[in-house]
Image (cartoon, rainbow, N blue to C red; front, side, top):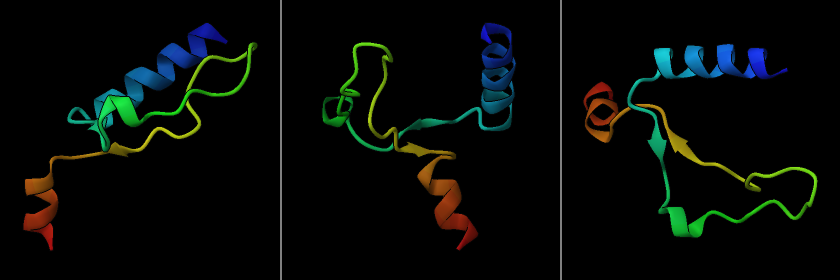
Amino acid sequence: MALAVGIALRALFGAFPDLALAVPESELVPQASFIAHGYQRLPVILRPAEVVAAAV
Protein backbone atom coordinates (compact mmCIF):
# COMPACT_ATOMS: atom_id res chain seq x y z
CA MET A 1 0.00 0.00 0.00
CA ALA A 2 2.83 2.46 0.80
CA LEU A 3 4.24 1.97 -2.70
CA ALA A 4 0.85 2.78 -4.27
CA VAL A 5 0.52 5.92 -2.14
CA GLY A 6 4.01 7.04 -3.14
CA ILE A 7 3.22 6.54 -6.83
CA ALA A 8 -0.12 8.35 -6.48
CA LEU A 9 1.43 11.33 -4.68
CA ARG A 10 4.24 11.64 -7.25
CA ALA A 11 1.63 11.62 -10.03
CA LEU A 12 -0.55 14.17 -8.20
CA PHE A 13 2.29 16.61 -7.56
CA GLY A 14 3.66 16.02 -11.06
CA ALA A 15 0.30 16.94 -12.60
CA PHE A 16 -0.36 19.84 -10.21
CA PRO A 17 2.99 21.28 -9.09
CA ASP A 18 1.28 24.39 -7.67
CA LEU A 19 -1.12 22.39 -5.46
CA ALA A 20 -1.88 24.41 -2.30
CA LEU A 21 -4.34 24.43 0.58
CA ALA A 22 -7.48 26.44 -0.18
CA VAL A 23 -7.98 27.36 3.49
CA PRO A 24 -5.60 28.27 6.31
CA GLU A 25 -4.11 25.22 8.02
CA SER A 26 -5.80 26.27 11.28
CA GLU A 27 -9.23 25.62 9.65
CA LEU A 28 -8.53 21.93 8.94
CA VAL A 29 -10.64 19.62 11.14
CA PRO A 30 -8.94 16.36 12.25
CA GLN A 31 -10.57 13.02 11.47
CA ALA A 32 -12.35 11.68 14.56
CA SER A 33 -10.58 8.31 14.62
CA PHE A 34 -7.80 6.68 16.57
CA ILE A 35 -7.07 4.34 13.64
CA ALA A 36 -6.71 6.77 10.74
CA HIS A 37 -4.85 10.07 10.87
CA GLY A 38 -6.00 12.82 8.59
CA TYR A 39 -8.60 15.50 8.11
CA GLN A 40 -12.36 15.42 7.47
CA ARG A 41 -11.87 17.58 4.36
CA LEU A 42 -8.75 18.73 2.58
CA PRO A 43 -9.72 21.58 0.25
CA VAL A 44 -6.98 22.38 -2.24
CA ILE A 45 -6.30 24.74 -5.11
CA LEU A 46 -4.92 22.87 -8.10
CA ARG A 47 -3.36 25.91 -9.76
CA PRO A 48 -2.64 29.51 -8.81
CA ALA A 49 -5.56 31.98 -8.76
CA GLU A 50 -4.02 34.16 -11.47
CA VAL A 51 -3.98 31.20 -13.88
CA VAL A 52 -7.63 30.39 -13.09
CA ALA A 53 -8.65 34.06 -13.53
CA ALA A 54 -6.82 34.30 -16.87
CA ALA A 55 -8.67 31.22 -18.16
CA VAL A 56 -12.11 32.76 -17.51
